[in-house]
Structure formats: C-alpha cells, structure tokens
Length: 310
Ligand SMILES: [Zn+2]
Image (tube, rainbow, N blue to C red):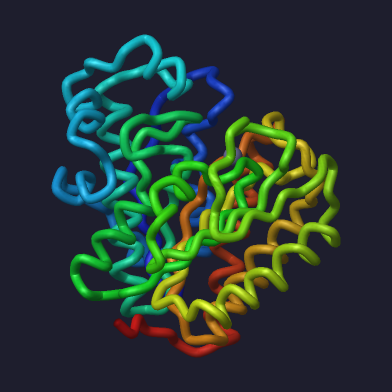
C-alpha cells in the first residue's frame, strides 16, 4: 500500500502505433507497478475527464471547440505532431482530469501522482509537441478557483523547455515556473519561465543536479508555494531519441527524489506528472517513470505528511 494515490485511466493510451511517442507507456507503467507489488488495486484512482469549464480556465473557446468538433486545420495538426482522433481528445481531457484528482489527493495526502499528464507544450490557443491540453495548468487553475491553494510552483524536468507553461503563467505572480532543459533542442522559441536552467548538450548527472537542486531550494525558500507540481520527464536520459543530455537512470531517480525531499521537508504537497520519454528501449522509459513513483514513496516515508495551506 502506497502512502498516496496513483491516478490512472486505461484510455490514457492514445494508440499511436509506431509513433515515436510510446503512448502505451501509461499502461506498461501501471502494469509494472501492480505486477511488482509496488502498488495494490486500492492505491489507484480512476479519473473522470476534466469538465469543459475546467479546461476553459486555461484554453480558449476556439481551441476547445476545434478539438471537440474535429475541425483542426492541417497547420494545427502539423504543430501537434500526433494524428487527430476523438480518442486523442478524450485522452487529453482524461489526463487533465487525472492531474486534477492528483492535486486534490495531494492536498490531503501530501502527494498525488498522475500516471500520465505533463503536457507542458500546450498553449491556451493551440497545441504542439504531442500536447493539446495543459493538464498541469488546468489543475492549478482549478485548485486556485476552489481556494485549495493560492500559489503554485511548477518544476519541469522534461528535456524540452516548458514553453506552454511559461506562456500561460507569464504575467501571473501566483505561479512560479522553473524549467531545466537542453538549450539546443525543441522548442526553438522558449518564452521565459520564472527560472530557466539551460543545459548544454550531453550534460551529466552531476552537472545537472548541481544546477537543479540549488535553484529548486532557492525558489521554494523565496516563493513558498502552497503546492508543487512536478513534471517528471524521462527524456533527459542518455539513451533518449529526442533528447541530447546524458543522465543515467540512477541520476534521474536521484533528481526526482531530491526535488521531492526539498518539497516535503518544507511541508509542501506535491503533484507528479510524467511528461516525455522516448528511450530506444520503451522498457527504459517505463523504468524511469516507475522510479518517479518509488522516489515519491521514499520521500513520503522520510518526511511526514504535508497538507495544502491556502
Ligand atoms: Zn520532452
């Protein structure tokens, strides 16, 4: 039994077939957590799709309408880089619903883990880079609207800069955005986050952690968020097909656990989402994401419960 809930829905799988985005990873992670005895059936919660009202706190009515009616232009689909289908739209609404549930449970349990989400390239009015709906932003806006939190922090460790997150919260003093990513990689245009840590090609575990952890500590001590949203990309891994950093599987686990411990020892509830992972071997991507859950468990056991304080 885990000391927090895992949020998962079988329809997170986008059934993209041979696409570089291995959307079957959500099922593989969930299966691995169960078959290895890391999680029991009662540890899982199954989300509902987010409501349109929840989505519309972040996204424009025009973009929501295009997605719901299947009227994306060829340019919209080219930017999104995944083929359009009604199942795809349902999966994005479910991912947003999942991150909302993870945030709700984090406010009670100190941690909430969505086995999905982290779609940080979605903008209010368009999607790109496999991301149509910004689940983390949707969850932050809902938690704020319900008075569960006032201030949120996003720590984004995907190898690609969190451009959608940066754009959505650009002029919002209630949301602190920190992104650590490979400078020489997608997205070409990187709107400024509150803090951007631009890593050189082939950055090692030690160099990466030496940049990330002091920045996270300083941000937490200055900003005092009521909730920390962690976007745990598996793609800084040295064997990633879309990444150019040189982190190891152990380095990535240390990354996750170190960030979680910084949050937990300050009493801040933490919501985790998965984001990208395109390792040559899908099993490596699954291993890295499973390790994020194990890191959360270790941090939760090391530091006592944290609750949201609005
Ligand atoms: Zn990525």
